Image 1 (cartoon, rainbow, N blue to C red):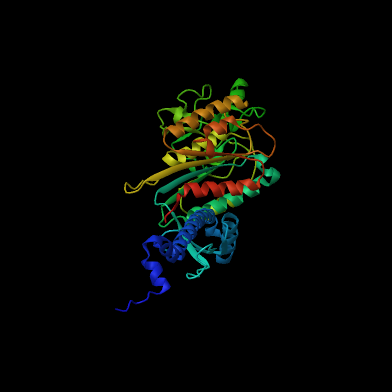
Image 2 (cartoon, rainbow, N blue to C red):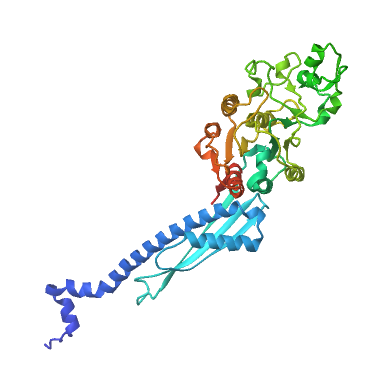
Amino acid sequence: MNRRRHSPVEHLLCDARGSALPIFAFLLPLVLAVIGAAVDYTRASSANAKLQAALDATALAMSTKAPSLSASDLSAQANAYFSALFTHAGVTDPSVDISYSTTNGPQVVLTGSANLKTLFLGMPPINARTIHIASSSTIAWGNTRLRLALVLDNTGSMADSGKMTALKTATQNLLTQLQNATVNNGDVYVSIIPFVKDINVGSSNYNASWIDWTDWDANNGTCTNARHHTASSCAASRGTWTHAAHSTWNGCMTDRGTTAAPSSGNYDTNVTLPTTSITATLFPAEQYSSCPLQLAGLSYNWSAMSSLVNQMTPNGNTNQAIGLVWGWQSLVGGGPFTVPAMDANYQYSQVIILLTDGLNTQDRWYTDQASIDARQQMTCNNIKAAGITIYTVQVNTGNDPTSTLLQNCASDADKFFLLTSASEIITTFNTIGTNISRLRIAK
């Protein structure tokens, strides 16, 4: 018989003594390809995670600006912000696209992509020199309804260092931000409380039953002895006092309580409804010469609120406490305020933002800061106990001490803001606006 001669390859494959080596040699390129692919795809996964984080952060940052920017400006700022955040070895051609829409509720949609240079997959036989990565982030406004009281310092010192101008800009921006965060009328209500030593409820309310005229009548009128200008001095001179017509009142209100003892009922620190049977619960009229603008109760009349903000002018002394308690009153009703009913189908967030540039200097009873601060701290505690969130902003351009009162009044540490320049009012209100409009990463 003739024996068939095996080729060298057949001989090697059939030789049991050397079978592992040829198999390994045959599989080696495949093994390297699998290991290389695992390495490159692990790198791609890491790069994609960083891409997602950068997109989320950029979308959140742009959501505070989107309502007030053109599409081109929004795109430019989004790309700049994203580029500063997204860095990863081997990544090329990063890009983002952003859109802002209110069609189905306000939302910002950001999509991003990049290419990752491969280390192994670019070699034969795969020849994949890059891996494309892409992701997206959607920021939507939550559906909790908001009621916000803006308690804004209008005192004389706000004229310094551009503070009043910055406050107007910041407040206008905040109103625009909140308006754009609404889907339906009533999703957001805002009250505006300009304060100095007093607040102004509007002189047209002079016939209201919730006004206490006791002090006003005693200090505004005429005496038959023309040298005397108060009821007490007139009586001492045995003259006859006639108080002025209430229609001449300028709308200013001072702190509640009794003349001799503010602690009687602590009505200057709470929102007990006024009742004619308890004089101390009524709101005391005062003819304060530096009366601020008339406050505005809860509303979604954005143009009216914008007009009020534009008219704010600095004048008078500082009494944060009266602004704060009237901000609270505007959320619960009473006196000049009628508060819209809350819909049981919704959750509600109630917030007060108190901004001031000075320390307390004067109220109805005191001219020392410590006494006024003590009353205000009681108000702060009562508001927080009622479940209302307080943000406090101290604009300290005059090297005043940091206000311990405002720090303690804020609902928590990250809700107190210490500013050292007027321009920071704008960025701070932007930050607070983002928080209270309940932005969230939807997907």
